[in-house]
Length: 215
Image (cartoon, rainbow, N blue to C red; front, side, top):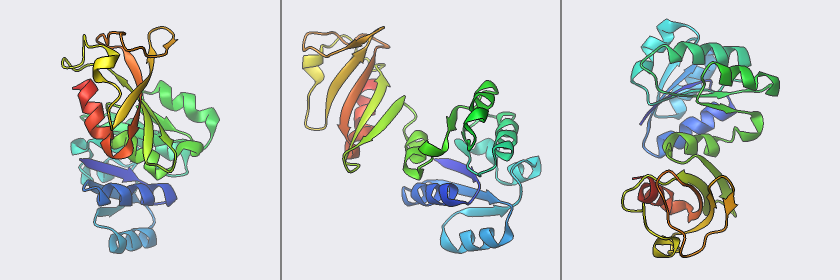
């Protein structure tokens, strides 16, 4: 996966390191020369010293080939402008950090895929949004060894089966069903296409379990 990150502050830097460590290709954009020099020495990533609100910088970063663009600076205006510009390209997923909650609606109104407020800008959360696109939402449980994920049933191997036929296993258990209201799972409930379910799953098995239900 190719990810372009704007901003090498605490959030951007930690996110870049996590993505790189998991084998993803990362380009980091920052307008501070000293920060760029340090980043180039510290991480295995393409580091561009420039402004992501400039289309020439975005072209240099090959943003048109990116799977995800993350605007992670502490400047809402810069994050918004860069995100809007990126939307003009053959579009990757766009994730933008917002420091002022009052600005969140503006970001959403221009079509930003995910708007992250400071409370949610932990690098691990951003990484999961990027690398687990079929997961609608997630909560980290315990010490990070389990997660509660929301998925929509799409897999032909699951559609038409009952809860009892597919859950629980050693890796997961279906914890809730959403069908206009929250339903506590019973063994005889049938999993229909596009039904939304919550699954408590071991962190190491999230990718596998997500694929089981979404195909």
